[in-house]
Amino acid sequence: MKRRDLIKGLPLFPLMGSITGGLLSPGLLFAAQKTPRPDTPDYFEELGVTRVINAAATMTYLSGSLMLPEVLEALTATAHDFANMHELQDKAGAKIAEMLHCEAAMVTSGAACALVLGTAAAITGTDENKRKQIPNLPGPRPEVIMQKKHRYVFDQAITTTGAKIVEVENAEEMEKAINERTVMTLFFNAAVSWYGGKDSIGHEEFIAISKRHNIPSFIDAAADVPPVENLFKYQKMGFDLVTFSGGKMIRGPQSAGLLFGRKDLIEAAKLNHSPHEAPIGRPMKVNKEEIFGMYAALKAYLERDHKKEWQDWLNRISSIRNIIEDVPGLTTQVHVPAGPANVLPALDVFWEEDKIKISPKEIYEKLKSGQPSIMTSLATRNDKEILNVGVALLKPEQVNIVANRIKEILQTA
Ligand SMILES: *Cc1c(COP(=O)(O)O)cnc(C)c1O
Figure: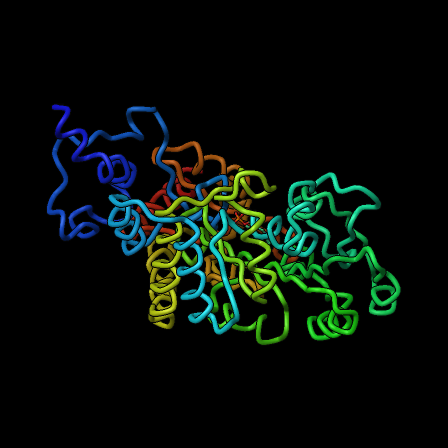
């Protein structure tokens, strides 16, 4: 490749390599760019990385979700010019806040980063000294209140700031736990999805107690679209800070997320973030293209026909059912999680194991290690392990591939 070609192609083609054979034909993605050059390398192949068919969910270890064509266009279209990152974050944030009907917003490097920055903002406000010192502030540790039932793997993002988590089990305990060290309260929205059962303190009461003591309340709703309405719900309820992942069903860059809510807190969160050199958020940089990409993703997500998309997922499920259902001993059922997290229709597949001699775990492993590699999920229904096949993250042409592979494995079991 000539050096001139290399430079000319740089912003576009490394990205394109990673999606060729990917979600859409490059011709469609880059309508203005015409067809890809025939010598575009296949980077998956070059590094020996397996392409995975995702019939599971938006999991970070499976690279989240696939960016929408609009997002890929935004990434490449904005890669050719410099911008002042303060100005970009401010202007993208202002526009996002307008779109989400809240005071202020910013793009973070994912919801986990938003948890760090929101907590840091609650600790430091605009105090420059504190910004320089966290996570090692002098004196007793700042405290963040959570329901005991809401403790989860991502709350390490809270303690990363030096804060300590104080657990409460009911409204009375929450009232009592608030003291001069309390900086924030955190509500894990999907605790009921993850653990079952009810929250010990409901949303409204949680907000009311926080407000009564003038403590900012933060809700983690990272995986909680669809439905799209959730993007507006929690700020309206009265939470001071809200986060959603950008790289789940909003289908923005995998390393982007949204933090939005009260203006003073968002301003303080920005002070704790890149491009400032020192603060805790400096290693959680979001690049220029990702900020534009996150904005483009949100815009596309809000404009999408969500009913049609849901119907399209149901149609995919019907296609899979049509292919596999004539295997004797097999039963299928559409399953939609109650939410609020991962509310996507999927297909439960179960069978009489004396007729079809394979366990759900074995078929899961076979699909995973097969050619092509297909990731499904194992779920529990009525105390029994079953195979769960997701459809929302499939490319259209993968629907039948997944169905035929499942059928083939079941028939030869
Ligand atoms: C996925 C997830 C996160 C982390 O989100 P990223 O955008 O990957 O940083 C945090 N909290 C919950 C509840 C999640 O589901």
